[in-house]
Length: 120
Length: 113
Image 1 (cartoon, each protein chain N blue to C red):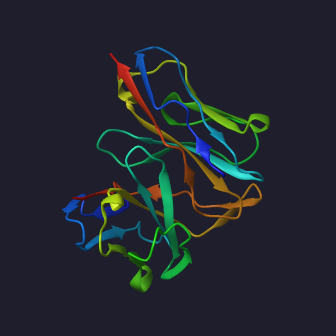
Image 2 (image 1 turned 120 degrees about the horizontal axis):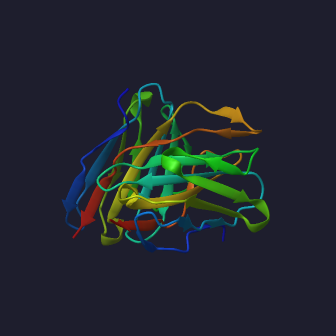
């Protein structure tokens, strides 16, 4: 079974430009998550898709970030226009539909290799 | 603010030394707890997880973690580290009813052969 893949692995752009990151989840995984790690900080949740619907986008930093998952398969995360503080590693994760475990719902999340974004 | 704290940023050990990495969280209510590991050049992998039951959980590669509810802690341990354990380790919390993970800042472990 193929894992979560992300493209590109590394992107270097100038401030003000646009970048689009792509994530292909594991086949059959309805849940797709985006996370970001700014250098030296924690990995932070950005948003969560269930199929093509945004379930939770509370972690999106501002309206320069746009995530889509048309058709409920792969997802893209566009940053437009990019700013210096957007530099970091963007992780995607996917999981199967929720199931109850010990009284709470849980999805084991499988992570992609990340895209390192550098904004100059 | 609710958070996950990993107090050790960089730990350097010799092979065969024992390892304990601290993790504390500040969320109330029911949580699920995880340790993830990222080996150099690889993606994040799940090391072990705790949902309920025995607070001492065993994971892959000889790692274990103990959930101490009264201390809001979930420390990771390994009795004898190997050079191949060199990696970055992340503690994460999932609040019951939610799907997203809250991570700590990570601990970089360097094992010297």
